Image (cartoon, rainbow, N blue to C red; front, top):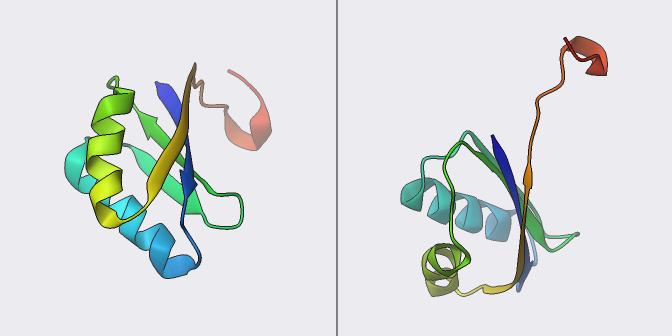
Length: 84
């Protein structure tokens, strides 16, 4: 599974977070997406690769600017953080 962290400029409140999350859910098959206006970022968990260009295409029409995209492999931990 992949973890994609997107730094976003322009999110000011919880509704901004919802707009970004909805745009991502409509555009990509994601397992989980969470946004934080306080941190200025969105974290996406997905099994497919999402390109930076595709993220910009999905997010920027909502009025927010993608600043940086970073990707890493995500390994789900077991119960209480212990690995199986």
